[in-house]
Length: 178
Image 1: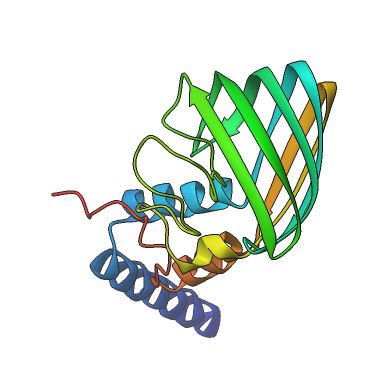
Image 2: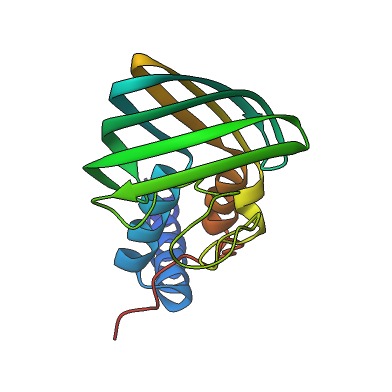
């Protein structure tokens, strides 16, 4: 009986110490919010309805195969939010040689909007608010009047797993409150 009480007392002390250490490293609310946001970043997608046709496969930001153009109303997950927007895309290419024009209205831009002629500057592999983790994506776009765009962001998976250990390679965690 005394041994069981001693074990419970020791377990409580260890749990209290662990919680105190976690609170000292990062406030729990901020930590939970940032991990949730990082988890949402791993998968992006939206549905489209409009005029045009497109078929594009992408493996990392540099490799593409496909072509098409469309003007569509879209709804889905973009940049950590659910929303609706209008998207006009003209794209084509094979392997490392590709081009893309994109115009988005209703949101600043869709994640993965790269190799574009954007209103915020010249075309580039990464936009100013992105980091190296955004290079590692697999994306499929299929559109024929009705369409789907799905993006698996493996770099963001690294960011999520790193965040569990308080490492933020995407540099997208919120500053600590207080």
